[in-house]
Length: 115
Image 1 (cartoon, rainbow, N blue to C red):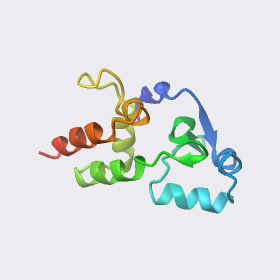
Image 2 (image 1 turned 90 degrees about the horizontal axis):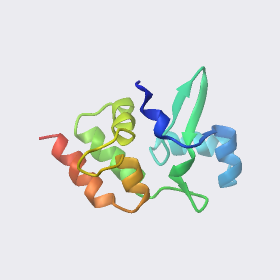
Image 3 (image 1 turned 45 degrees about the vertical axis):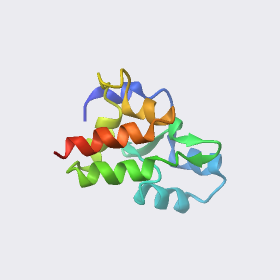
């Protein structure tokens, strides 16, 4: 992966996420498997971007957006990279736009990538 993850302001470990969400670690791993959360493994440790946890819940629009990107032919790794790469149309990263509530715009862009 590239260094696009410099756009992530804060990383949490899986145990940190479990504590923040007040759920068992196994539940966090299931949320990651089901794409309610995304994670990156570095040096054998799994990290989750803090910004995708809003009001002690996973960002609601994330799972569907990951599905759209996967349907467009993205691997999970490339989908995450796309979410954190500056987009000239949005004038920010797709993740920043999604956190700001622009789910529909992000999904339209993602669907257009499949064409």
